[in-house]
Amino acid sequence: MEYIKSETYRVENEKSLAEVATLEDFGKSDKELRKDLNELRKELGEFQDTLYAHGKYGVLICLQGMDTAGKDSLIREVFKDFNVRGVEVHSFKVPTDLELKHDYLWRHYIALPERGKFSVFNRTHYENVLVTKVHPNYILSENIPGVDSVDDIDSEFWEKRYRQINDFERHVAENGTLIFKFFLHLSKEEQRQRLLRRLRLKEKNWKFSPGDLKERKLWNTYQECYEEAINKTSKPYAPWYIVPADNKKAARVIVASVLLEALKKFKDIEEPELEDEIKANLESFKQELEKESK
Image (cartoon, rainbow, N blue to C red; front, side, top):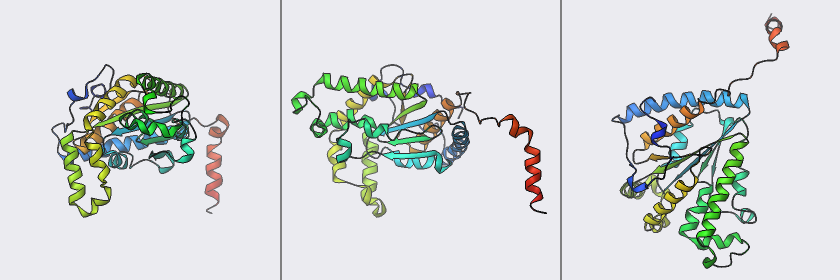
């Protein structure tokens, strides 16, 4: 959409989350925003077909945000027009026993997109510098050499993790993965309203967990961790975008627009040409098939 400029949301200099807006609606009605999203996702779907045929790039989309930020509904609405064979969604929960037998990035490596496909990470490898930083005791289950107690998890440990994540993203970017990272920036009051909605509406009750309220009490700590992680890992090869998330429909339009704008810049992504021999015989192939109906 012409009214959306990706540089408005892209993190290129250090950001303070407290100074970034959580609400944007562009002065448009819900109906207008839905119409704009329909246009954008149709174009994204067409691009995905071309990316699949081209087969040289994969696209990784990382979504992070506080509980109720709208990650699930954004995935459902933005990628609705994709061919199902061209997009995979991975939702990373608490690591399994198998995953804990590997380094913390292993499960993310094996979920990276194949060439020609999109992968969407619903919560991402950044949980390893977010929830684990808020709850450092979680790190102990990783059984890392030299980390025997929470006292061993110091500032040097976290700096090392930021470096490892940057190295991971640089490596996959240099090998054909296009990376987009979106932080759905939600206000604390809007989260309160969404949690109340889950409690008031019977059909939404299943989404609620008492743990949501416990984590909400750590809101400021989480904001500090997000801010530090975003500022330390937004790179040209793997940029962060801070998306106002209080209006879900506007947030979806922003994400879809940013993706489409950036992906269209890759002029080498196009459907492959047929081999000369096949092109020269297209008419004879056509005639052969047409004769079958006679």
